[in-house]
Length: 327
Image (cartoon, rainbow, N blue to C red):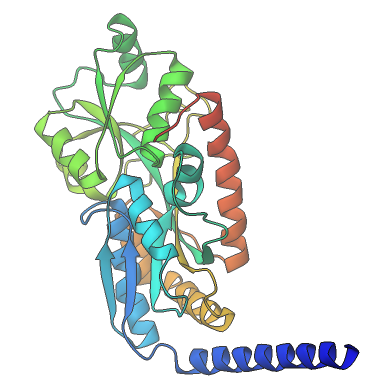
């Protein structure tokens, strides 16, 4: 019996060594074919804008083509589920953000994925604040104006946001709670659709990211009221933060990052992280991220994992406090 146990243990060690050798061999040849980057939101939005910056430069660094696969729906849940079930070989990556990694699992009754168990963090890419913006015809010119209007007409102001599970949606819920006002939240499928309706005046005001609305904010087609970040945006230095404008702590800063399916060889994770950090140091990439209202963020896989945990603790506490839940 003892000899049989020893043989089983030896066989297990041999199998483990073979798997490690196969993993190392795969990493040595990586990438040998195009890489698919899943974007769990529609084309034209803020996540898509970051993904295209990463995909273009990462493909050049890795000397291999990349393909962006927009899988929008259910605030990123559909795309994240797809990424979680992909083969862990480094040929399918996911461009995630705070909403998909740290909000959805608490907000949705059944998100269908676990950001910790189903994914291997590669590294952070950038951060961007959510901005309170309005159609030019909207009377409120400040946070105080908006709060005053909402108190005079409870539930009558339609307030546009990206879908539930995003930083923009949670920013609206946080704003309502802190200002003690009742506004009707109108969630959109993505930030591009929200921007279109803000421009058309179909929804007068909302929380949105800068990237899809940049041209309109600069031309006057939309008006920035306040930035829901810890500091003012360098692109709009005259626009106050929501905290400055009277609601201290009302902040929503989205962190974007690159994930791989759990089980992806560590050698491949390290290789992609190395290239990601290199491209984030390049002036061209930093300028492109800044032009969309963001700030580059560079990290190790471990630092990105810790960031996911911190953001989850922050947003899950708010979700519990406000008793929010999406079926």
